[in-house]
Amino acid sequence: MKVLKVSGWTIAAFVLPCLLLYVCLVFLPIIVSVYNGMLQWNGIGTSKFIGLANFTKMFTDDPVFWPAVGRTFLLAGFSMLVQLPLALFVAILISRYVRRTSFLVSSYFLPVILSVAVIGQLWKTIYNPASMGGMINQILVKLGLDSWTHSWLTEPKIAIYAIIIVGLWQYLGYHILIQFTGIQNIPADIYEAAKIDGAEGFKADRYITLPLIVPIFKISVVLSFIGSLQSFDLIMVMTGGGPAHATDVIASVMYNMSFLSMKYGYGSAIASFLVVVCLLATVIINFLFNRLDKRFS
Amino acid sequence: MSPSTTAKVIKPAAHARRRGFSITKTIVFVIFGILLVTQLYPLLWLLIYSFKTNEEILSGSFFSLPAVWQWSNYTSAIESGNYWRYLSNSVLVTSVTMISVILLASLAAYAISRFRWKYGQLVLLAFLLGMMVPLQATLLPLMLIFKNLDILNTRLSLILPYIAFQTPIAVFILSGFMKTIPQEIEESGIMDGASVYRIFTSIVLPITVPPIVTVCILAFINIWNEYILAATFISSEKLKTLPFGVNSFVSQYSVNYGAIGAFLVLGALPVILIYFLLSEKITKGMVAGAVKG
Image: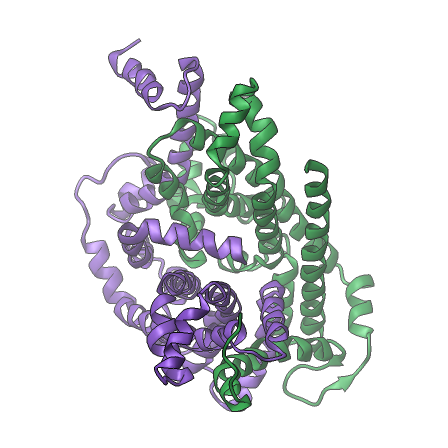
C-alpha cells in the first residue's frame, strides 16, 4: 500500500517541522511540569527539590484542593446526567419529527461557536442584580417573586450552579448535533426491517437507536467529561474561582496558584494531577463503553 | 382553539415521518420551541440591550424594545475600546496559525500515511496522546520557556502554542484521509518522473482539500475564541486578541451598560457572520472533529 520509499532526509523534511514544534510545546512542557511539581519555587529565586512534598500537601493539607476536585466532578456529573440525555432525547425527536432539520440544529448550535469571553460576560450581565439590568432578576421581580432574586454569582452556595447552567447552555447544541448526526448515519433499512417485525416509534428507538448510538454517545461522554475536567476559562471569566474559592475547580486552582500566588512548584503539582486524571478518565470511559458495546452486540 | 394554533398542529403532521397522534407532535414542537427560546433568547436579549439607554436597562422592562435605537452605544464602544485593533490582531493570529497548521500537519500526515518507514505509527501515536492531555498543564512551562526566549508578550508567544495545540487533531484527520488515496495516483506521478515534493504539492494536496477545510474550521473556531492563553501571555494593549480585548474592556468599563452590551455584540459578530455564511460546513466540520478525535 505504501509505495513511496524515500530517503531519511526526505522523511525528516516532512515530519520534523511539525513533530519538533509539537514535542517542544506540548510534550516536553508536560514532562517538565511533572518535574516542577517536585520543586519549591516561586519563579524568581532558586528552586529547591522537595520530592513529593507538594503532592502530600495537596492531598492531605489543602482546604481548597478537594472541594475543587469535587466541584470538577459536579460539573462533569451535571453534563453527563442532564446535558447528554437531554441532547440524545432532542436528537431523537428531531430525527423523527422534523424534515428540514438544518434551521433547528444550527440554531441550537449557535452558542457553541462563541468565545467563552463573550459567553461569560453575557451571562454575567444576565445574572446581574435587577438594579443593574440583570435579566433573570428582572424577570423574577416582574413575576412578583422578589424573594427569589439572588446575586447569583457572588453567593457562595449558588455561584457554582449558576456557572454550571452556562456550561450546559453553551454546549447542549454541540451534543445535540453530534448525536443527531449519529442517528442520521444509522441505515434506514434497519428501521424498515424492524417495522415489518412490529417495532415502530419509540419501541424502534429503544431497540435500534439506543444500541446503535452507543459509539457516538461515547464521544459525547468523553468530550463532556474531559471538557469538564479542563473547563475553567468560563470560570476565570465569570468569577475567577471566587467568592472565597466557592467556584474553584482543579484547573482554576492550578491557574491561580501558578499565576497569582506565584507558587510555581505547587501549581505544577496540581497540573500533573490534572494530566493523570484526564488520561485515567479517557482510559476508564473507553473501557466501560467497550463492555457496554459487547453487551449490546 | 384559535386558527393559528390549529395551523401549528396540522403543519408538523404533514412533515412527520410516521402518522401518529397530533397531540404528541404538538408537545414535541413545543419542546423544540422552548429550546429555541432558551438557546437564542439570551443572544437576542443582548442585542436589544445593546441599543438601550442606561435608564431603559435599569427600568426593569427587560422585554421591551428601546424607544430610540441607541447607535451611539456602538460608536462609544468602538471609541473607548480598541475594537479594530483587537479584531485585526485576531485576524492576524488566527490566519497565520491556520496556514501554518495546514502546511505542517499535511506534510507530517503525508509522511505518516504514505512513506514506507518504521516509525510512522509511533509518530502518529505521539500526536494521538496530545489529544488526551489537558493543554492547561502546559501554560506554566510555556510561560517560563517564552520568558527565557524573550518572546513573552509578542504575537509569537500565541501563534507557536496555537499551532502546536492544533496539530494533533489536524495530523489525525489528514493522515486518516490520505491513507485512502489510491496508490495508482502516486504511481502515475512517479512514472512521469515527479519528485516526492512535486507529487505532494500538485497531486496529493489538491485531492486533500475536503479534510483540509475541516481542519481549517476546527482551527478557526478554537483559535479565534481562545481566551486563557491570550490573557496569560499577552499584557500589552496593542497585542490583545478579540476575546481577551472584549473581556478586559467589559470588566473595566462600567459607565454605560448599553456600550458594554454593544462591545459584546461586536465581539460575537465576526464569528456569527461567518457562521451565517458557512453554517453547514462549520457544523459538519465540528462533528467530524469530535468524531475523529
